[in-house]
Length: 193
Image 1: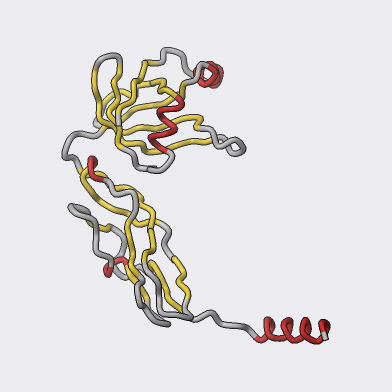
Image 2: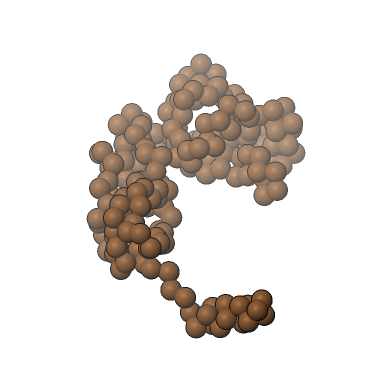
């Protein structure tokens, strides 16, 4: 994914507002001991890059010079959800990065059971150019009481899961009805009769 970036020479809230009014997103690129670079990115193209992949790796064209960068932080307007600012980190081809990747449950557990995702993301160390969008966890056919731990999950190619191997990711159980729920159900039935 390529984004054309221009250098910003003005800083502060007012300058950031002017950048956003011009249809661009203020961003800062830092890392590898370099001075932070203040950039402006095209709003719509940047939104398309980060909307589905929070760990997107992009090639920035900064006034003719190309730089590989990892999206590290996206700040959004709390109401409109517009992107207000991006933090980007310089990465080099083949370099490994550690990122949070969302857990995605696949398959169906045993009939009559439900699954509870205990860890929404896993910390993964992976080459910067091959960051997975999700870590898939299969629950196919798992029965009541089954627990999927971080160490049980097959990790994506060239990646390692950094979370504690004993960390619980998904739990399979049969939904339990409490005595209070039963009492409410009986009261509702009596009222309807």
